[in-house]
Image (cartoon, rainbow, N blue to C red; front, side):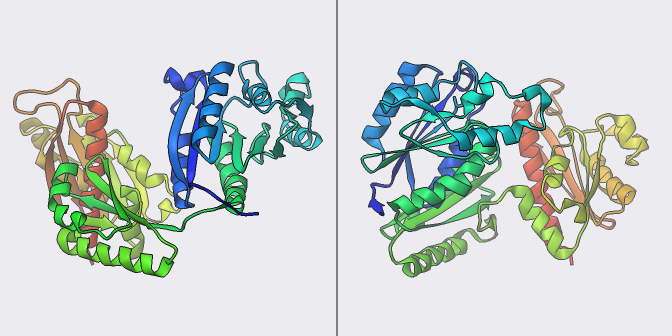
Length: 421
């Protein structure tokens, strides 16, 4: 039976480690994104400690406010994992042994002699009597599905890859079978060259004239802004036409500042161009310490375009490996236009690639001078014939400077690659 709903979901994450900052809650962000894509609306996210009274209060409040309650954490075999016992109290039920869950536990521990069959592992197979247990394909803790007055509560493991697998393969399909969800579409655009406020001013007339039912969200990132245009309608074809029409209007305003029409990472924008044009690339990094290399290499298939990197943190490496002239380093220094241009050309020649990216600067928080304050960073992109470079004057945060310089270098390489035949 399909149930109508108010399209509301609450996520509850459980764990002392979340509240003291020892572990970052990535589960809620991932779940929120996937729920939104499937027509559900997350109304609240609550993080609570491993404490029964907090768990019971949070669940009671969530049942008053939402149609779906998703819980992560506290399902393990140790004493601080109290979610199952708390759920038993809330639903006025008891723990019972589930043979299928225990078979799943044994499957995971059979190749781990140190995790031999013991009472703690048997506890993993104890589930609340009133729930429907769902096997965890990636771990030992079963997923617990409860139904109450046409509302759903699901308790999931807190380990991210276990939760993600369960949500994708089991929970989202079951929720969509259980509830009638509105049809939703969205388009995400990557906009470069504007800060959030400047972009809002630039497109204010367009935004003010958006048709009823379409919503715009600004999602500022380091050095760029994501714009998400979304809408809900039973008429999917009409909604798509409306979204496309508004995106075309926005493109006429922003032009090439829109780098992509999908929710995509900056390095993927570059690597898609490299693959399309069959170009290879290499990197020479000083202050970014291999961050660009890490982004280019993390995606499957990167070996087809990415050849390697030289992390040239000291002048000896810049000179001896990349071929930066000693007189350049002595006269204008490592943080200069001449140095990064020679670094970019040098890595191109050294690794025999079509394009080379280079970065050199003062990331901070110390090391700056009056002439070269902290945040001074040069980036360059070259091939065997030409080179382009750019000076950045950033702030005093080391991590932010490294991140922003990385993204700027990637976008400069993207523009360079686009203009090459």
